[in-house]
Length: 232
Image 1 (spheres, one colour):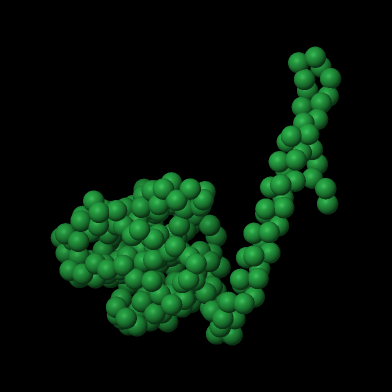
Image 2 (cartoon, one colour):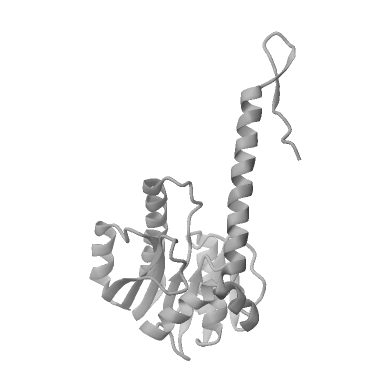
């Protein structure tokens, strides 16, 4: 379908049509169609997408966490896990099969999962923190996970700063909700965590590494910060 041109009233009161804007709209639509086709093609050819369907996982992201769990032993059957930015629930689903309890928080709705309590909202909001405290009975958790990512604008430096801000917010939450000895995982982009934040995290964890799971697409810039053994 041809794009509808943008219309506006000129200062003389006559209705005008901008050919330039129409051309831009057509170009944008072509680009969007191209990227949509590329995404669809990637999904169809992705073995992890197919595997997730077959094994009943909500997203291919489940396999990233499964690999990190195998390598770093993030949680066990007695663990309480907090999943930040949890929707659609792939990571919560994995942890629900391993840990004692899982609490998922997201601004978006998330369909119910067995052994998972869901709180809708911003994890930095006082009302959400109060609800979390009620669920935990003012206890702390063993693992904090963050697969959060910002809306990507395509400008590398800006996208990097945005993801670092999310990582820092999730890390700061460790001081509120993570038990001593607990573990923390957060998504970052290639280039890793900025040195200042990395130094802060290293002061409060026994081991801090960057890790790229096999399930992360090769062309993707995502890697994960894995911090083990929280200390005050």
